[in-house]
Length: 586
Image 1 (tube, one colour):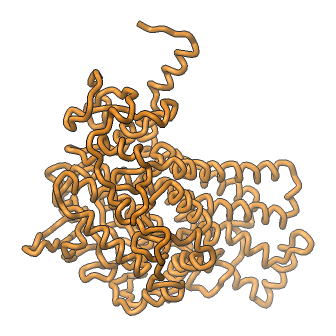
Image 2 (cartoon, helix red, strand yellow; image 1 turned 120 degrees about the vertical axis):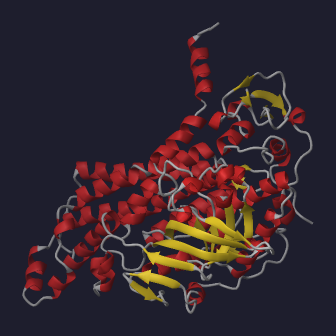
Image 3 (cartoon, helix red, strand yellow; image 1 turned 90 degrees about the horizontal axis):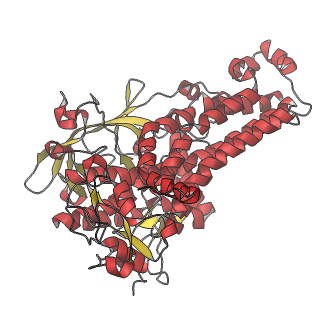
């Protein structure tokens, strides 16, 4: 017997207003309809009707408030019972694994199992101008492989945090879990911060987790409107991944070309991933490119998604599907990272963090065939914007991983201050406090987004959209300031420290050991190590994930400001102020 549907009457109340749209809908508009200001109470929802959806209208006057020129009626508090017509069944309630049922084990159980699955795949990878068939042990790649492997080690060390029981009935990585509650969202966030602490780097699995949860809801919505079978296909795909305990990557960002033009208007039609051919059996043939792809090479499957709003002329670009990473027609071109060649010089100290690192590739698709069972959107362009905005709600909240890296930076700043003998100075203490303050702001807003999660019609939970965007906007700023303060505390040797080879030199080594001493009891080697770690995270390989990715990943700062403006309920806030001021306007 399946457990009762989470959300109860609240989910049923939302269903009528958040059902599959008859035209393109922003997730922020859905949020306004579904989740009114909490001061109105949990016992009521906002009754609203779009001119195209035919929802209940209680004497509302239409106002052009929706984005992209859509017209939504004004929101009015209405009892739940009056707002509900026929509830739409939630698939999550029907597939969730019963809590008292036996739980199975996945095929890939350990980090060693995972690493072994990456070998022998004969993937086309170009690294530093050379075609590499076996990339796992390549010195540039290995730290990123080991970083993903750490997600499996966490699952072993702390199963409650690192794993979940999926609807497949298997205890697998939490990165494959479809969030069934706000508690699941919170555990995702706590897991991400912990992995940031463990690796000091990008562990590359957040995009896939957020893609799974976004596509879960979107396929359900498309089916409700078009009578397609995408959601059932996607369920089977996720079930397979859970049973195998695969790593799933997400591929959203296209080449984009001229940003002022839509995909179909580009001079080269392959600057965005598109359907080049549809075969009689339903197989799609894809061409195009995905850029900035974090960890996809270290994955088993990738979920390909459109990266922006599309219109009718762009139907061929409105495609969501799953592709095995070793599919014919895929080529991976490895991205450069600052100081990456230090991994090939033989010095562990000079790398700063020799164990863990991130990874980005450009992926080209040249006539890649996708069987119909792995196609989850084909031409339903009106759902692209809601898919993207759902994804960004999940993914911007996922930047709590930067708080994990910030924990490492806080520790590094305190350690280098201890070594320098400055830790007791009042201004140094104040700077350490500032790092902690900024870092906890990142974590707090991410957790607020997770705790505020609400169910979508498909039954899985979506983070609070406003708080997710505030979290990511904090991330576009605070890691840079944390890095600046940490460099301030580290001192100039951070950028003038001689190479490890100089310390091994018969003449230079003893001189450096003599003149680079600091506080009594601190070895020169330990001073070098902490300085190289700070360099790695603020200027080196892992600055890619901690700084620049913090700026542009999941959308650049202005994208968050647009959504914050939409969701800040300014008119409500003005009414609050006017009421307290005793203002009466006619």
